[in-house]
Length: 97
Image (cartoon, rainbow, N blue to C red; front, side, top):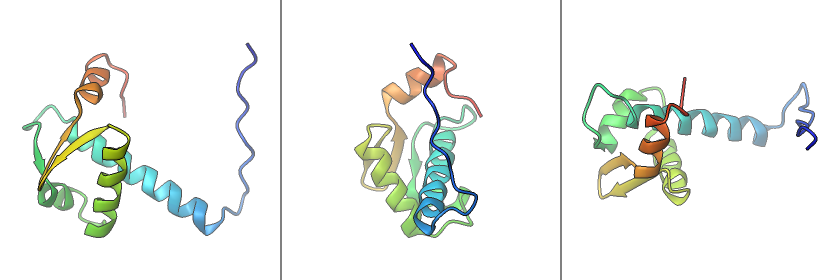
């Protein structure tokens, strides 16, 4: 099977590309926070916003909504936790920094 080729990225990305990349970076940061081994599995939105202190709360909420839609995490009111599938993939060592 031939290797997938990456699409050529412009040296001058558009505003939409920059926003998309920033959103993906934020989503990764949220997932890594939720999978931390040094604290409880459940986080409040406020705790995540504190950890991601440079990010406006509306952007955190948008990223949380997207991750929920993708099945990466569960939201219950103000509580957030990684999905069982995300935790299992992390336990298999497939999520790394």
